[in-house]
Image: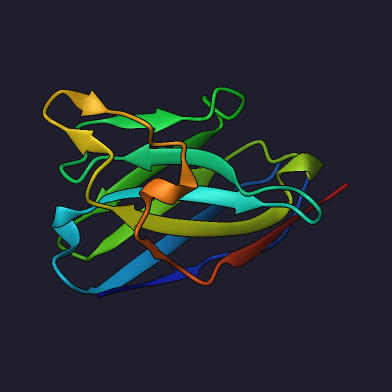
Length: 130
């Protein structure tokens, strides 16, 4: 089992920045490809970005690329989501998730599908006010 806990959410004004963290405990963190998803009220869960277990590969939702950056520190069992130039439509609960099957030496595939992830955190609320 892997336990994931997200922190760093909160209220921010339009154009501001936030950095979310996801701390993992349990099985070896470095074995997992990690992703961020988000879910706004009344909407389906949406892929944000993924980072491979070795941090050599990242991929983002096309609409978010350039504003959001994922990183990880395997020594600290933590991944991060740096969010810049925030917009009201970024308001959502943000979840981190772990998978052993979305990335390989050939790249990352099907990484935007929530069903590919085995472990999920409880989420952290991000609210962007105008």
